[in-house]
Length: 204
Ligand code: UDP
Ligand code: BGC
Ligand code: MN
Image (cartoon, rainbow, N blue to C red; front, side, top):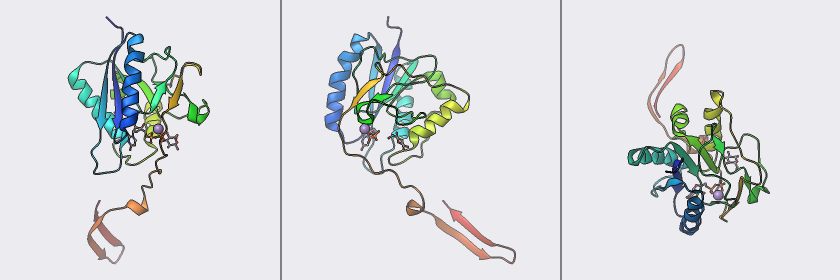
């Protein structure tokens, strides 16, 4: 029996070439590591901007129904690990797996980055209440996850630079999410100019 019972959760939409390359590469890679694993592709329908973090939460919930995985790996579809010693299992602390990616010159872009690929024990993921559901569009959801994980004093673990090596399959850069004033939607239910203040009752 393998020591590792792992669910790989992949957020996905409209990157078929990457998906094909990813599964073709990852199955032999994971089998070499003698893991007990299952790959879940969590695909978002077309209606709204892409929400990577919410897809991860959905993946966790659906995987949980299928088997009692003790370790979850939240993983982009375009990241290809190049060192077979980069074990796809969980460590004592949540592990940032993709610390050294070719497009970032194999260096960490900043110390607190937790994007790309992360391995985390089921209990730890539940403890931090998973990811935020509210990051539509590109960016920020992984930084929010870093805050969730480290808030309770947990450390982040990384393997050394020769092990945590990845190449990113090429794609055009998504526009960063511009959530804010320009995407604000609300309905004023009541507006009253009262003697002491103006009251605006809103449905948001
Ligand atoms: N993704 C996707 N379709 C999209 C946008 C993102 O499948 O239209 C998934 C895919 O797994 C991708 C990940 O979300 O690898 C992160 O997005 P992206 O690669 O654009 O972000 P990067 O980290 O390269 O800036
Ligand atoms: C974004 C992250 C992203 C990182 C590296 C940051 O500015 O908030 O979501 O992973 O850049 O691209
Ligand atoms: Mn990418």
